[in-house]
Length: 92
Image (cartoon, rainbow, N blue to C red; front, side):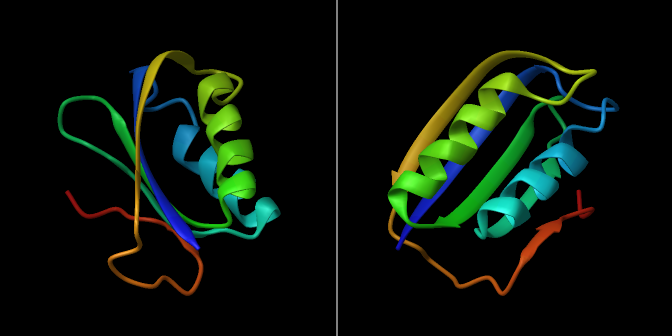
């Protein structure tokens, strides 16, 4: 199991991006969270098999129907915690 941390930039807040990421992640069977950051980007932390996470990464580059993804900065790492599902984190 690996962990992917991705920061998605562009027009990615207020365009159903978090919902899109949550649905995509759940469909792929990965765990973790997605949340808006104060700088206007969206953070995604996802855990699963590398091939499945790469599929999620492709979805992040596409974005939701209303979004415009300008970039995705990715970091691959060993999981630091375990998640039971994939949630939208509303904490600031």
